[in-house]
Amino acid sequence: MNSGKNLDFILKNWSYDADNICVRLVKGCDGRDLIQVRVDLGILQLETTGRPDGLKPEGFDTLLECLCHDELEDPDFELDDDTCMEIDREFVQYYHRRIAWLRLQYFDRAIQDADHTLALMDFCREHSPDEDWTLRHEQHRAFVIFHRTQAAALGAMEDQNAERAVDEIAAGLDQIRENFSEMGWDEHFESDELVQRLVQFRDSLRDDYSISLREQLDEAVAAEQYELAARLRDEITRRTGS
Image: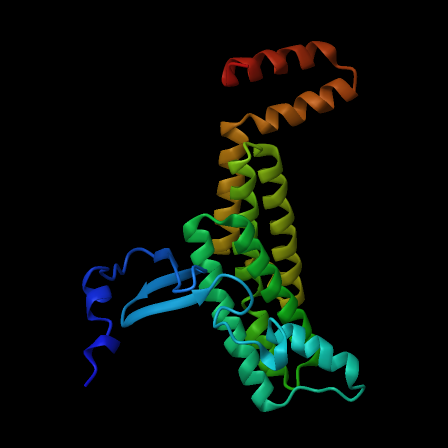
C-alpha cells in the first residue's frame, strides 16, 4: 500500500471544529491558489476560478455557460434528468465556495459566486422539466440573496462606506421580500431569521454611523428647515467627532 496517498499528516495538523467554518487558502503544485475546507470526514479542495471542481463542461468554464450555449444552438433545448443532476452538483459546489469566500472575507468573490448561483436558478426556473425540482431550488433563493447582501454590505464597510452598506442591505431585503411574495410566503417575511439578521445589521449601522440622522439632515435641508438642520448637524458632530 502506498502510504504517500493518505491524508493522515494534514488531518492530524488541522483539526475539525464543529462550531466554526475551517477554511484556508493554499498554493497548488503549480502555484495557483486553492481553497481548502476542513469538514468532519476530511478536506474539500476547491478551485478559486471557474467551477470549484476545476472541470470544464464541454470546454466551458461552468455548466451554466455550457447550458446557455446549448440553448442558443438548439431551438428545442430542454433539460433531461442527467443534466438536472449535473446542475445540482454545480449548485452544491458554488455553495461551498461562497461560504468559504465569506469566511475568508473575500467579499467580492462571494458576490460573484452568489450571482452565478442566482443566474443558474433563473435558468433552471425558465427551463425546468419538473415543478418540484424548480421548487427545491427556489426555496433557497432567499438564502443566496442573504449571503450576497452580507458580502456586499461587509465589502462596503471595508471601504468605510456605511451608507452604501445600508443601501445594499435595503436592496437585499427588497429582493428577499419579492422572493417571498412569489413563493406565497408573505406572512413569514417579517419573522424570517435571515430577514431579521439583515434588519439588525442595518439598524446597528444606522445607529453606529448616525445614518438615520444624516438622512434627516438631508430632508431638513431640502425642506429649507435650517434650524432643524443645524441641530441635526450638531448631533452628528457630537456622535462622530467630525
